[in-house]
Length: 220
Picture 1 (tube, helix red, strand yellow):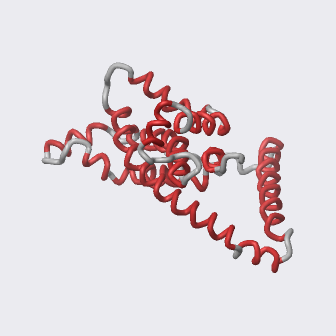
Picture 2 (cartoon, rainbow, N blue to C red):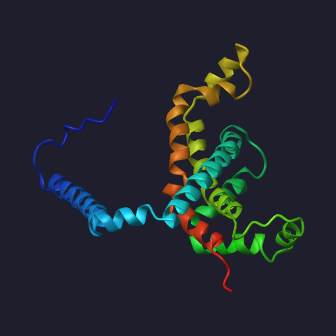
Picture 3 (cartoon, rainbow, N blue to C red):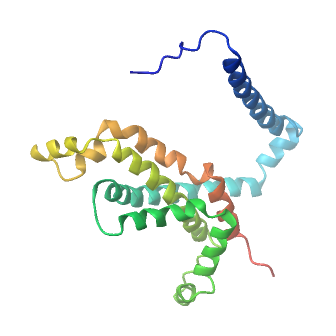
């Protein structure tokens, strides 16, 4: 049964306080965002947005975000389905490992990636083969993937867990492949649509911070 929003329709101090906090925070966010746009003169704003540096940054961000988000979708679906449907030893440990990047400060995650793909044995092996990751667009994609994959796994897993497994069992009796009906179930579409959006590197401040630390040119 949907919640009754008219249950607290009568004026009360409780309702007034909570609505005051709500509208106060909304006004604060609107003022800050509008101030960001109207503060610089319009000609200077247009000149900055059309400068070669800004256009290159926008193009690079869009390309790397699309690639890393696509990779996250491809990797997150089987991982989330396995964690939601299968029972196997170490399942809780694996779930905890996927949650570690969510708790890491962006700077720590960036430094960890720099070490792994830089001076470590694995990084030197990649460099010896001519594959450089850090300070390249590939490094940006790797950083975005590392930070945003746990977000997508968590959201997609929640979407799978909302589907009754009985639907999948019935679908299998009708000839559907294992997991196929679950992935195409309309009840999963809201979660499937929200997971790429919520984990998009362009919308994630953590990914932006890690991306900056992994793509910044080394000091000369």
